[in-house]
Length: 109
Image (cartoon, rainbow, N blue to C red; front, side, top):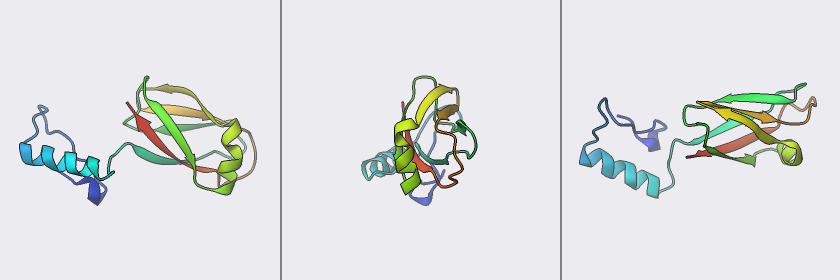
């Protein structure tokens, strides 16, 4: 099993049983801000939608966006999650040629 600190999320083994040591490590890492529910997306150019695939996303997941570039900050007012499903969500946004509209995101729930 990996460590969140090493960039690999901890996960339950087959059967869903986690030993106490692993559970303790998972809790410590969560308390220090490490989790596997974040990602990054750059909006598609010359398009009005961008599809994102993420195994942590479901129908009821809350997706929070954070602009990481100046052009992404300028796109905040016209960028929103227009649909989501099992392991995917779609962002709708303005159509332009800017290739650096990059957002970080958190998928909760």
